Length: 187
Image (cartoon, rainbow, N blue to C red; front, side, top):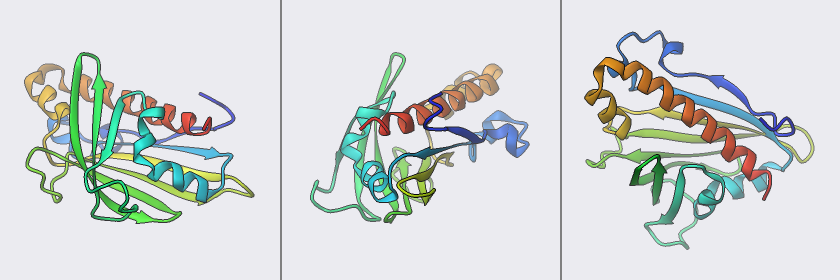
């Protein structure tokens, strides 16, 4: 962990919610990390909403592109595609911007194959708050939704170790979210 960034774990997965059945627990499983960045909120806003730059920082996402044209500005309702790699698996998802409140919050839902925004695979969000002159407190969160996902499929196929699969994946997401925030500070 980069002490200058000060990333902290805020919440954890299903054990924090008291869930017992890991297959039931995947919906609502969440990870949240915080970091204080030595950048003003307006600059952090520019970074977190520049989806084309995500591959520069993310250990998992290797390609992104706006599906509704690059010149449409950041606003709720816009869509982008994100291509990810994890171990020997690659996948591309459609993301729907759900919140764009400059320079305070940016959120999106990852749609599953049904592309129902009411049943997303997951929800992601950056919340920004001033933390002194030229500094921003960033809260980065992930919540697994009720939609289908690779995680849900893997847990279903391996019920006997589903809880371990969930715990490992949430740990990976926590590390990747932390790495992403740290990488942003180097831009």
